[in-house]
Each structure stands twice: as structure tokens, then as C-alpha cells.
Length: 218
Ligand SMILES: Nc1nc2c(ncn2[C@@H]2O[C@H](COP(=O)(O)OP(=O)(O)OP(=O)(O)O)[C@@H](O)[C@H]2O)c(=O)[nH]1
Ligand SMILES: [Mg+2]
Image (cartoon, rainbow, N blue to C red; front, side, top):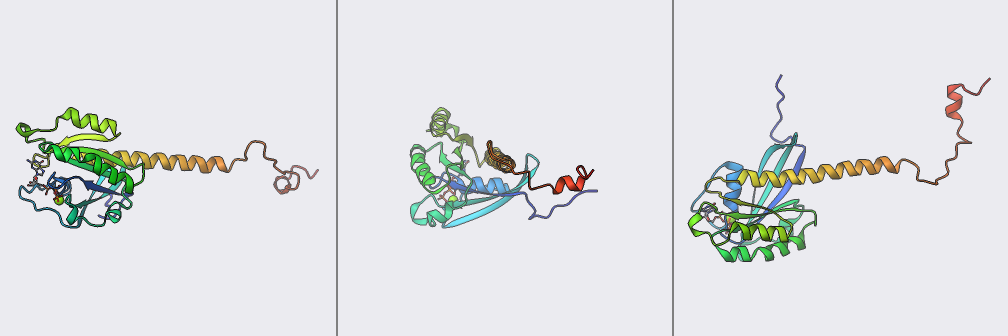
């Protein structure tokens, strides 16, 4: 018999944020991933939008809630609310516009100032389909990612290249961290119920167990 799960049944809900300069393709990466849609004439985002997608990762149902805001300062929503509770981030630049790559360090600083140090971050060089206009090489992207300890991928929202892969990789890594933490917590709970070394255990007064077993009555 098939087992049906309703739309809202999931094991984990992970909040991800999209950041990066205006026009790098954040909103199109989001619509490609969640709706398989692309818009060549999309308008700048105003305020905050978000979309969700539920997927199966390592045998668990993961619901990703992905937040998207404007790269342009004047359209941006209050920063701390945007970042609150985020466990993953996709920091996007446009491979055809060098300044968007140079601004990555600024975005990273804002991200680090507002999120937990364990947040999973992937650096994304988007618009890889515009091969003849490339202004940031793959090597440059990789090097920056390594220096800043980020995951790295080049994508094309237009051609749907690596988009699913990028989101899935971030979500998989978050899930691994969460599972690891759950195991550590369980181990800690188990060890804390075991007496510490050198601790005195008083068994003299507690004979109830023996009596129940009837060992000492004869
Ligand atoms: N060739 C190409 N164009 C893209 C790609 N992704 C986005 N674009 C185009 O780039 C422009 C900006 O895309 P958006 O997704 O609106 O950019 P954004 O980062 O959300 O911009 P803001 O909301 O202003 O911060 C649009 O004209 C898109 O069609 C891509 O992978 N390849
Ligand atoms: Mg946008």
C-alpha cells in the first residue's frame, strides 16, 4: 500500500537566504529551483519574497524555505529579520560583472555579523551560459571560496545548470550537521547518566532490589 504524505509533513524545515548584488540572478535561481521558471525580464525585488520546496535528502523529508531580497540597498528589508534563523546561504555574483564578485566580501561580512558561525554558505557564480562575456574565471571563484571556507558552484538559472545541485548540496550539508549534532546530544545524554569517575555510590541503604529478588531471605 502506498503511503501518502501531505504537503506539510516534513522532518526538517531549513531556512536559506539568497544574498548578493542587484541583478546577479537571485530571484531567477529561486524561481528555477522552486517552480522551474525563468524570466529574462525580471524586475528588481522589492522587500522580501520567499518560496518553499520540499525534497528528500538522505531518507528525510526536508522543507526548504528560501528567502530572497533586493540586492539594492534602498529596496532591502530590515537586515536582522532577514537573516534570523537562517541555517544556509547562497551568496551570488554574476560571472560577467567583476564588481559583483568584488562585493562578495562585503556580503560575507554582513552575513557573518547576523548569523550563527555554523551556517552553511555556498558561493555561486551565476550566468555561466554567457561564456563569451565571462569576467570572473572559475579559478578566481574557487580560490575565494577556499580562502573563505565556502562551498562553490557556477550556475545558470537560464539553462538550469547546477541550480538544483547547488541548493541540494547546501541542504544536504545542513542535514548532515543537524544529524551529527543530534547524535552528539544523544551521546552526551547517555554519558551524563553514567556516574562520573570517583563518584561514591551508596548501595548500603538501597536493598529494595535485593529483597524483590528474594536473594537474601534465607
Ligand atoms: N543569461 C542569464 N541571465 C540571467 C541568469 N539569471 C538571471 N539572469 C537575468 O539577469 C537579470 C536579473 O535577474 P534577477 O533574478 O532579477 O536578479 P536579482 O539578483 O534577483 O536582482 P535584485 O532583485 O535587484 O537584487 C534578469 O534580466 C534575468 O533574466 C542566467 O543564469 N543567465
Ligand atoms: Mg531579485
